[in-house]
Image 1: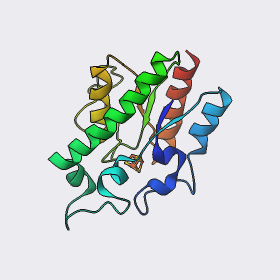
Image 2: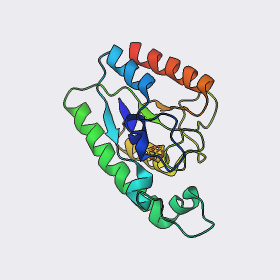
Image 3: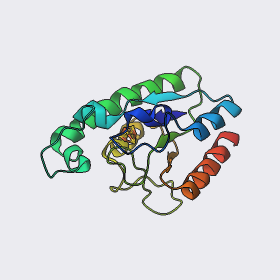
Image 4: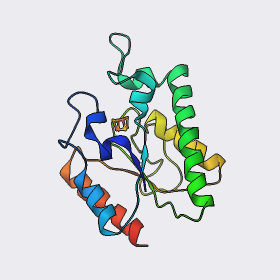
Length: 169
Ligand code: SF4
């Protein structure tokens, strides 16, 4: 399972954005229950903007990532992650899914083009997730992308349910 950094470590989130004191226990518990290994995707906001998400006054984090520099930085990170995914697959592993973040996450939101669509993710998705989806498709790797929406308990429950179905199939 490919997971964004803040699922394993909430300290990666911007100040005040953490839902848990340390990690998303539900997702990790589910992976433990089914003996699924996790590969951590480095936080794109930290990788591209630094830990403090440095940006010009008045600019949102999304504004700062949605620039030539930010998109190129996300593309580079997506290339590294994509190469790693391919390496796992080429060496006999099954990669189950990519777990992204909350719907408003500038880097990692996962928004589908259509509800329940496996037809790709939309431009409303995080800048990094768009780059990763593109990178994987260039490698002919098509994985389910699931936004783990821990900002609302009912959304999280639904996402955990989807995730469990993917693990069990
Ligand atoms: S950019 Fe992604 S990994 Fe980083 S804190 Fe936001 S959702 Fe988590």
